[in-house]
Amino acid sequence: MARSGIQFQKGLSLPEFQRLYGTEEQCEAALEQARWPDGFRCPRCNGQEHGLVYGRRLKRYQCRTCSHQATLTA
Image (cartoon, rainbow, N blue to C red; front, side, top):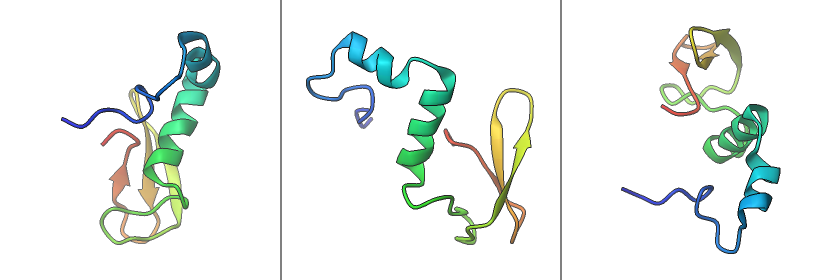
């Protein structure tokens, strides 16, 4: 299993980690940037246009081209 580049940043102290990723919104933004550095890309059709679907626990990104749903952690 690969090491998490976010969790194991060299030289990152616990207070610095909490400052960068201490809230749910900060973590979500960091994951989104890590997964889609150039903006959303559908894993099925490579489309860029998407809508948001809020479900039970996870926010899903739904491609407007093929209707495929993706999450930040899938």
